[in-house]
Structure formats: C-alpha cells, structure tokens
Image (cartoon, rainbow, N blue to C red; front, top):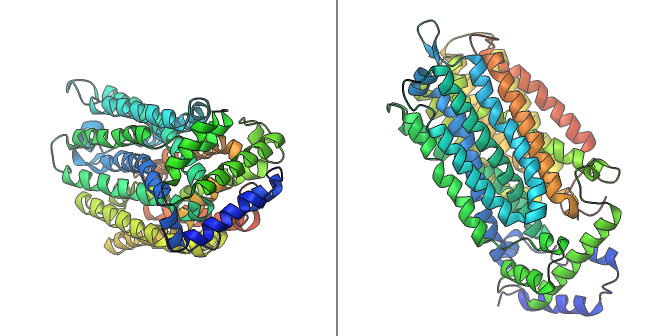
Length: 506
C-alpha cells in the first residue's frame, strides 16, 4: 500500500460517515486530496493516467493529419501533380492551397458539433470509435486522388479536397470526444498536467508526420505514401474505444444502473483507490450533476444562456489561443519558409526542428501547470510571441538569407515559449471551465470554434504571404504580433484563474 494511503483512506472513511449526503454544497466544494504533490497524484491515480494516455492516441491522429496536409504542399512531387508553373517554378495556386487548408478545419467544426450530440446520446466510447472509422474512410479518398494518372489536375485537386473535408469532420468528432472523456475521468489534481498532453501528443503526431514527409520528399508520388501512413493513426483511437471504460459522468446522466456506474469507476480507480473512496467519488459526482441539472438543461442553446454564457465564451477564447499565437502558420512552416526564400529540403528540416522544440517545451510545461496559474502562463506566452513576430515582420522589410534564417529562428522561438505556457494552459482552461452536464456540448463548441478559426486563417494566409497574391512573406509576422497583443488584453480582462478551482463554482 502507498505510504500515504492508510492515512487518506481513514480520512475518506470518516468523510463517508460524517458528511451529510444531502448537503450538496459540501460535496461540490470539497477536495480532500488537494495537498498531494504531482508525483503523489500520478502514483495514486495511475490507472486513470494510463487510460488518459490511451485517449491521447486520438490527439496523435489530429497532429499527424495537421502536418501531413500542411507539409505535403512542400513536396516537389505534390507541387508538380497538383500545382502550376509560375515563373519557371512549380507552386500551388493560392485558391486551391487556401481551399485545402480551409476544408479540414471547416468540416471539423461540423464534426465537433455532431460529436457533441452523438457522444451525449450514445456514449464517449461509441463516438470515439465511429469518428476513427470515418477518418480512415477519408484517408482512403485522399489516397486515390492521383489515380488514374490521366485525370485532369482540377479533378485530382477536387478529390483531394473532398477526402480532406471528410477526414476533417471525423477528426473534429474524435477530438471533441477525447477531450470530453479525459476531462470527466481525471481528478482535479491531475486535470491540468494531464490535459497538457493535448499539445504534446499533437506535436508528437506532427513530428512523425514531418519525418515521413522528409523521407518521401524525393520519392515519385511520395505524397501518396504519406497519405497511406495516416491509416494506423486512425486505427489507434478505434482500438482504444474498446479498451477505455465509459465515462461515469455519462452513465450517471443517462440513468445507468448503479452497478454499471460503480464498475466503470472501479476500472478507472484501480487497486490504489479504496472502495470507500470510489463510493464517495460517485456520491459527489451525482450531487454535482443533479445540482447543475437543477440550474439548466444540457443543450447547445443552454450553453449560451445566463449562468453558462461566460463559461462558454471562455471556452471559445481558449480554443482560439493557439491560432492567435500562430499555430496555423507554424504547421505550414515548410511551405511558408520556402516562399520566404529557403530550399525545400531545408524547409522540412526547419519544420521538424520547430516541432521537436515545441514538443520539449510542452513536456517542460507540465510542472509549470501544476505550480503556476493559467492566466500568467497564457499572458506571458502571448506577450513574448508578440515580440518575436514583430521583429520577424521588421526583418521582412529587407530580403536575403539573413531574413530567411531569422524568420525561421523566430518561428521556432514562438513555438518554444508558447509551448511552455500559452498553448497547454489554454487547453486546460477550455477543458475545465465548463459545467459537467454541459461539458460534451462545451467541447463541441470549442472545437467548432477552433475549426472555424483554422478554416478562416487557413484560407486567408495564402492570400497574405503567397507570391502570386499578397506577397507579404516574412512581414506576415506583423499580423500575428497584433493578434498576440489582443490575446494578452482579452486574457487579462476576461479569463479567470482556474487553478485549484472546482468547475461548478461561478
């Protein structure tokens, strides 16, 4: 038995005996494990941690798809088969590049909203499995985009567009479900550190995707190999849907038998949690849900009514923070930096270096999230990013290799400093601020907003930096500098500090 278990179990037993179970306020606001360190919490709830990592496989799929779509545009074979000659050089037309970048997040909006309804009706596991299967279907459509070889280039572009849209909708469904499931099963002590793995696993998926792109860079139709490599990442969440227990929160809201709810919670708790503590967890969970149900219903409209509107607006803002500090552009850094003046092979290496640096930064952010508040992490990350983007924009006034390499360095520094704070902290805020009975809907709204923002940025950016349109190139940094400053102001005035707070409190 753990060295702290006997003392805590006695406290839990006393709590079960002495707490008036009709006193919902005491149940809502008590966290008798608040004193545990991160290491002790990981040890105590290690079974939940393992299941959370299983759910994180969905994030791998999201990250991998994100970089495959953004980086295949940097492959010479893709530019030749899907592009046009412009001044003796193969480039992708701004319109089609914008549409490809737009379609996946745009459809993920619909998938996130549909996923919010579906997971509340049929369960988190069913929603995760269905979304993963539909993602594999979308990959198949992309894979056949260049077959047969004699079809017109516009038809080829259209097939690829359709496949990315279908897959984007499926990924929106999967991501909303995974984030809902994780936020419901994690105890308050681990919610911040473990939810920080969303950007970490996103970056792991991205670095694997970038390495695949790099390996296929000079292969004939190598982009088709890159598309096919997405199938294993679609299969992972499907397998995990059969492994991870159903969310007790969902089961209670659906009126499941107490024995079923108890069995699901015991699977999550594992041998390190005493039976009395499991019972107390379920009693508190039922009290929380009944308390919130008495205040409002669980519909998308109710999310925007008085009492929940502020929470919903915070979820929306948190979902936009990665776009504000430039994640849409950073995920397409290889193609963007080519437009600034770097060679194709070097541009992919820069992308990989940036992703690895961001990955390490997000891993390093875990103890920061356990120690510091969400607000200062978001504001400091965005403020520093504003400086980096601003100096990149200033450098873009000139031209030459110094500007190219300086731009690459600034983009890497942005992902490092935002990875240390703003990115993971915003993910935690968006996951924990919503009420329990509206959590699935809130995550649907969050991923809908994220998809809408990605779609808008993805469509607009090629018209800003591409040489056949706006031709801003490195001066694009001015745009993101302004957005980061705006993000700091909005965080300061509208985002409350959520660290250590119960999500049911106003």
